[in-house]
Image 1 (cartoon, rainbow, N blue to C red):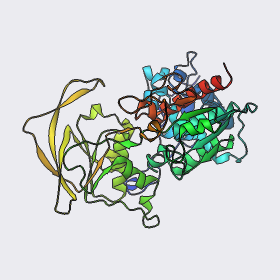
Image 2 (image 1 turned 90 degrees about the vertical axis):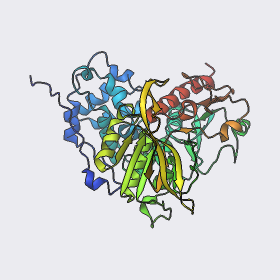
Image 3 (image 1 turned 135 degrees about the vertical axis):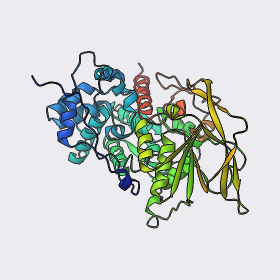
Image 4 (image 1 turned 45 degrees about the horizontal axis):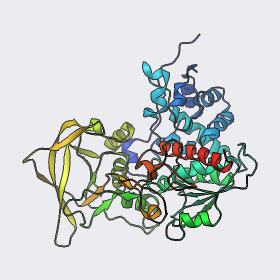
Length: 466
């Protein structure tokens, strides 16, 4: 018997020097030979801990076994039976802290590259799909109507699950394309927009209706949806309200929120200017404030848009960065420079009110805070000025208050998130569920999908009177 290969198959990528100048996908994906070689590393263990590590409960050993057997259509069927958006998850989910972290091989060796295999199978399925109704079992029509507000990962997952349960589902999207944060927040080089739209079309193929340019809380309200005859409503409106430093000079021109910067770049195609007339004014030195995935995305977009010098400015050390290690490494390879243990306290502008510099203080790490990370403490007398002419603030987001404030009986927290049962998504308003970032604040795509799936199961029980 041949010895088990313990070496994880590397993912082919564009070279850093080339990819920093284009918006094409950085990770190129496995070939079939590479995918099967990686799948062969799976030991098909009896305890199957990887499934427990997946927020949507994908039958990971089954789809990997089908891939090993070269039955890729069956692998795709297994994936789609539990995950409505596998091509997206295979690209942007933090598998290293979820399913792969639970892999038995991870105890002594590199875990199976579950995310990369998921991407391969999902892309194969997209490329070989006939466009016909998917081979997914759909229950007989129940006659019940459900409105899903928001077409991000939570909403798309809830809609797909509810449609498979036989309910009539209508989705409402405030923007002119469906996909939510998957479209406006994640750059093309990490998540191509045609992949997102292919997954949206899959959800549509299940019988889900999608209404665009429908701003809930303005054009209609959740209360009105229930009055119009919807039997249940799911809120998956995300967290699209940016947070700022609240320091002097933050209103100067040339300072963007990451939301605006990424929306202009991704959804409004600023990177294709002048073909798409949505320019972004960038100077010679860009500072991105923050250390999460959104900060990495903004910094890498700034490079590709032609900025000669791009900094990540983060108040903690590299070890405390919440961004995925892969994204940090990619940014560094592409030429982003890191200013760590640094915190801006004031922005300085010229006579025309454009930002020209920011005053920073050097930080040191103290005792752990409520997040478990060591608290950054300013060092007295360490102030210095850093010349910049563009700033992107990527400090996180909170939910937009529009829907909660126009919905009677819907309780929200001090942070502005919707209060909902963590296991079922039930809110304080009868007939209304919520899940994803609107409940938790900024989190991962897959956690939002898990919330959408759990809420769909609860809504189904409610509609069936069980």
